[in-house]
Length: 311
Ligand code: FDA
Image (tube, rainbow, N blue to C red; front, side, top):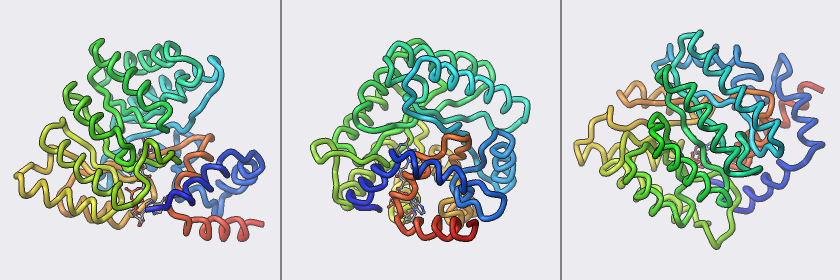
């Protein structure tokens, strides 16, 4: 796992317009585009193609049309309409009906009501087609309002949705109990954002220990949890706990990100576990991409090689 300093460094770089321009120019070049490793493509056809390949390899998927932190109602409306058309495209393509989205993409930074309305539009359009809609979790400034919107829509009867919770946040064990009480599904993650010490664990051992406690609470008291990690130790702890408690392999799933630890993804499928790959796509890939670099600074060498090859 990254240390807090490298996370903070890449978080700061993610705000650089120059870097974004440079990355956009080279990221998807026909040969050696470095962004391809983590992002399925810039358009929906490429994402659907990646999805089909994953299905053929025995994996489940969730599609994420990248975008976040929009600052105007027009952008939030456009992002919502993009999701509505993605729903149609997924139905027409006959691939698995599962999407992930971020609330700041749907207008959370503008106001709660705009975002709630937009998420309701997505949930309303997706329900009749049997979709599952996962609400990603963003930085701690929006944890409470994300959960609040999620609970409000759950209360209105939208039950084909789940949320993500981050083991690095001090509050998250209580949030697991809160979401378990609703009977909603949780995706358990460590957390990819740069958080202050007042709200988050900063030692890897503490984040891992909280992850294991949350995993156990979800497996025993939650509803079909998703254990989303590439960390072998966390995966082994999950397998062992499930085996000890005789929790069947179809009562939970593992999740990993597109392009990361493909060997481990294939191994879990071969061992009979459910494995869902998070497939991000779209033109707004830069912040997502920078979080992946922040998780593993060794990825920077890989990016630089790609750029140098292209120049
Ligand atoms: P850890 O960081 O300890 O990594 C374990 C091993 O995995 C590394 O040693 C390395 O081998 C490999 N690895 C991890 N990251 C890598 C990378 N970027 N490149 C190459 N190898 C890498 N976060 C969040 O805040 N909100 C969210 O909604 C989500 N959603 C989400 C969905 C899914 C399906 C996954 C798998 C992850 C997320 N995340 C997320 C990201 C998550 O919070 C976390 O930052 C990453 O998963 C990295 O943590 P790991 O648990 O993999 O462990």
